[in-house]
Image (cartoon, chains in turn green, yellow):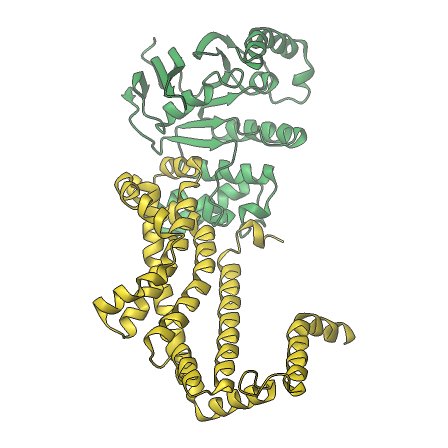
Length: 263
Length: 255
């Protein structure tokens, strides 16, 4: 428990009530410190509570068991300091690309010209020039997720929460989005918590990978990824990358098999 | 050219066939003019009434009654639907009432409103609103309950306060289903207006038709049917155009 951590999970637990009315433990005793600027992936099979952990950090789900601190202050609700990107994009479908990206800026007391300038800059950053007046349903999945990322970054959050953000995209688009995300991160570093069940994605993107196991979800092991030249092409073919994938897959496999068997 | 004529024939064919059959059945003398006036006689009556302005006065009265009740049903139904979706107390109180009221023939309440309010515009609007409010409330509630939580969460993390969620997110998200409810409610409002006019008298199309029946004026009765059918058609088409305009962003308009 270092005091310099930007995000601290302190013995966090969570239970939900099943349809039968039984209290089911989803998370138990999760403790993890995340430093300023770090990219941490939460990796685990479905049902291990990794998304729930992210929702607790986002302040969307009330924390009843344990504590989560951001910059030393306990999380009590959602805030602009923690931007979020969901797998389902969660764009406002009645708003155009421009209106979606501008949404958060309109809620800050910024001059109109400043709002416009920042919106234009973000749309440019995610390469959606020319699509400003399209509605989300007129865009491909990859483009929609770019809009969501731009909308989140517009309000300049210190922390970026990503809930399987590329899980709904096809394989090629996912690869491209990975590279773009790293490029954005290189220009504008952010503390990131990234939920995924994709081992390769976790190794490629994260500084540290927290492997979670299920029922109730807890952190099994935290693996530090040390890949020099991550943004170089071909890094995914290196032996070091393969070794990390192998090791994490070994940690996750058992859990995934048990989860699939519906233990 | 032929294509356009063909499409026009296709669209109006049923009506044309019906008119032709009506003409020949009426001309055959199988029914008396009193029971089945010829389409020509009915058309002449509509034109006469149109030239004298009578038809527009009745029609205006009917449409104003229907649309006033419809608007009230829209406002109350939307508020009730959103309230039921989001406020436990509202749901607790109104859920059983809506369950009972939705399938009930609301026109049964007309005598009550006549007793309370009297045989006037206000009681007609009240029964119309009462009949049309249920589909709006039910559809709006379903829409408001279906708003994705990630949409609400995204808005919150972008600086929307819990209190602003209703106006910023829930209301726009609910528009498609609210419009569906309104599209169900519009014909209900028209039907109820005509029935209320027939039962309470007055100046509307329903009242005029009843008056024509009492004077054994069968072309007048049939003229009323045709005018109200045409009016309903125009109103519903207008509603469809409004829907398309409002839902430019929606999947159904994406093509």
